[in-house]
Length: 309
Length: 244
Image (cartoon, rainbow over all chains, first blue to last red):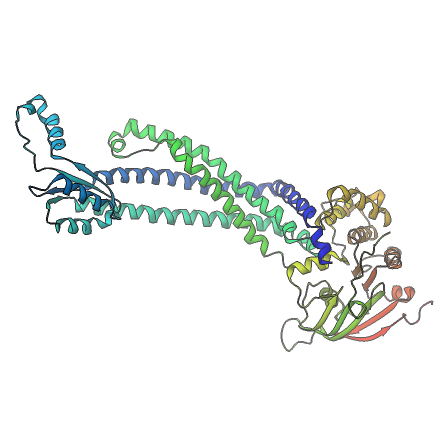
């Protein structure tokens, strides 16, 4: 009998898949008010997630830009050769906390200074007044490690001075951490609420179809045949619920950036706003994945409880 | 043909149903067991009545045979499957070989008679192009061709039980388990249902009917197992006092 049962499986899988898709749509329309409530719940959660994500992405972009400006600058003792400085640069670039190192030679430093402040008057200088001003500008990968790096640099015999801002580093490091933690917390709560509400909707559907599930189990229907329509229903609720708010998030973001640019020029100059296209390249797949994921999770958790007949 | 025999899956003992010293208890330890050491065998192709008063253990017996319940002690084998060790996928495989008929019909009220049978066939994995033919065939055999588009609520009790029987027979079961199939029916309808079950038996399918309808048991003159207090108290090859 086992072999007979297994032989039947390929055709059965096709039937079960068809049943799952057809049944899923049918359940969605049969419980239309509960389905609508679930879709709206997912929509609200994904909308809040989308808005939160756009704000977070812009803040992170602003922080990243600020990090670029918060760098450690190293000046060298008189007589340090360019080869020694470049060799030191190579060693620094290998350090984990370092994102990048920019070398500025004494000639480049003088050229930049004279062009900015002296114009043609710079040509009257016969020698380079900044001849010992070659420097390395270090961008930090991990701002929290700035203190250790500065201590390391100050211990090097060739280093004359190190310029850095501890306050800026600590503020940016703290702000970055706070943002990451709040993002994880808010997203976690939103997802849990959505999964719970989808589970409630599927429960209502299942309670009204409890007898059908029992009968199907007595007949000898597989768990997949019984669960399929409910899982499809959950996936559809999640998918539709995620698609609806994306348009709203796009519109609101676009208008909000325009409004801030026109009315709050100081905020606009301090913040870095990412283009909506860039944001949505991540937001669309993540939102759809989240919507379908919570739909799948909510339905699976609910339907599993009702299969033991 | 109502029920079709496919393969011989009888146990080594020659029984399609085999219970040995089976115990089943619900609830508290100090309560009397629903089954208190039941042993019985049903051979392939037999027609058996299980009778007894309410609380005698008849329904518990059926629920053990469909593996809705698991025995606390003893051996339960159906179609050579050991139900005390059966996993979930095994339960599905077992039920595909059984046809279960309930006292309250258990038809889906929001689907037509045809859809009820077709759903069962789909659930059993019948290829889509064979569902319509088999559903119509089995509905014709129970005499419901003209009612196939009716909703269950539009049918009499007897017709609803015929529809439930058609659903149970649709997958060519090897055993029909019927729990009080005439309990909600008038006498004429009850006779019609029993006539259909007898026809299924005559075509080779094993039939086990749980009932407390003495009139039917006497009239049919088949094997009768009587239960009382969770025990088999008699097992007669033919019901006593029948017409013979």
